[in-house]
Length: 274
Picture 1: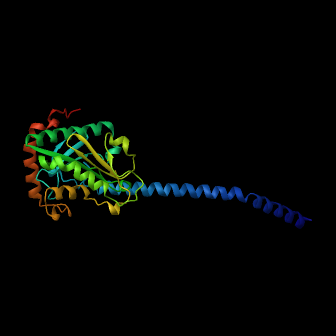
Picture 2 (picture 1 turned 45 degrees about the vertical axis):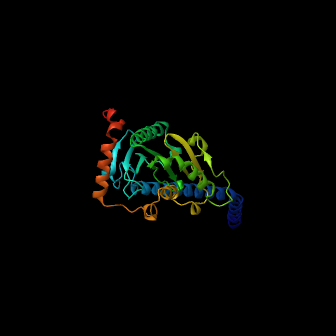
Picture 3 (picture 1 turned 90 degrees about the vertical axis):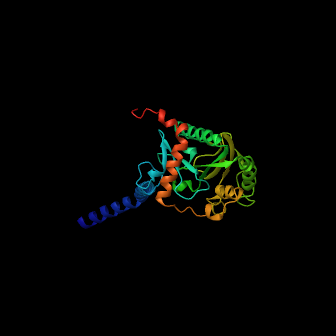
């Protein structure tokens, strides 16, 4: 009798476990999904940390070429390029914080970037020159650091620049694309969604053109500078490879730029104690 009773209870217990299999399975799936989510977040956090550590544009990064910086704003800075450049005054505007495109900038940072542009336009206008501003936000999913390239141009080249860029954008990436190739920019931050890779060019303080990049293999990183180099009749070495020039050359270029920029330097009016 005892044997039969134990057997009966064991059978009943086994049936209960069998009937509860779905519950155990769902719990296991939940734990597994939660662990996968945790692992994914951890990997993403490590990837972000690595990109910040290796970034040469972050203001707190060890790789920033501070000797190339012309002036620091509140949230942004102006610097000459470390490579040969298309002109001795080829420079960049960049945010101090790590942001991958102008689409993602806070409003106050976006406005500050525009202040730099106004100063540069005024400076180059005094030199009898025109200018363009290029943003190449490729592979934004890889979290690059936003840089706007600023290039002075002879007036006759500046007049033709919109025609050349419009033609080049309309002919890029082949025939089959999902998005409209050429966007005439009025408010770039409203025209392109966050997370999209794109190229944009502005002509002085006027709006310009933008293009959403769909195939990175068909849209080179040097797209904008190649067009300008062609217009300026410069050799391929000026735009194909951006190899850093000697530090002494970088320092001399930055010092020369600072002297030119001094009358237009809005940052001198900042209260650094705030």
